[in-house]
Image 1 (cartoon, rainbow, N blue to C red):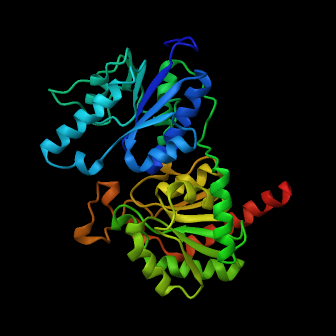
Image 2 (cartoon, rainbow, N blue to C red):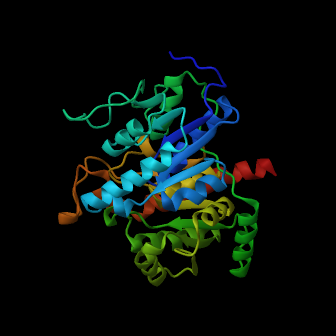
Image 3 (tube, helix red, strand yellow):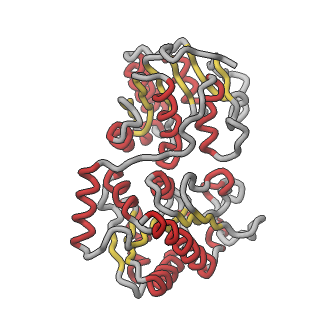
Length: 367
């Protein structure tokens, strides 16, 4: 096991080019590194949309961002974006790079940055082709500390470096002025803190979104049983889904989808009594601020991706799944499989009521 003195690193690059849920889970890695190496400067390589969130909440000292659209563009566009990115990164003269993206591009970037210590997975998630190589000189397990959850894929560098695991789950505190903004927003809608359910019905692919009419029915029943208000959250590209829920729900629903930046969304989720939604970035954000979560899963396994660190219930239809998605569904790809559509409303409502009852006792004890 490699042992390194606490003062050995002054600057560390974390390559995390995936999505919001991955960013939240990777925040636990950053917090552990900050405790192990006091004063270290941690820089994330990530998509531009996440830059403000990472720096505002102290997860990263700085961010070097990239455009996903350009990286998916023509060979010329990809080449130019890669060149710009690497040139920006090399100016930092990093002592260490940690590649938790584990892609062909991230391995190229790790090699070109030329840090003395380069941490990477061995074996890689997808076998390397004959012309590829793993540039890491510190190799980490696919999942660290003997665990199976994806959180421990992102904590695996600590084990490889001989760093103690002190922060075991993401914990992100909203900024005070964002909390003030959220409380004022809730007041305008006559909603009390801790008296509403935050519902996220979106996802990157239609097959990962539980049906809007089922969300609407679940909302009506949960609100009717508990008296809690309902607030819809999500991105601006999820307006069709939220509009269908608004049209189908009999309960008055406040629709804030597309109206909040990530920092404000985090503060809103902190004030919610419960989060209900698809397996997604907002689900992990809700868990990171301590809000109980009912998560809806399809082909993606809760063993790997369930919310961590909070009371939660993860629901998934029985497997193997009888395909209900037709031509839309690609059965072997969790990001393009429609298994979540097989979830009925009853177990979702039951899970929400059970979790509310269970956590109500915790709230009463705290008071």
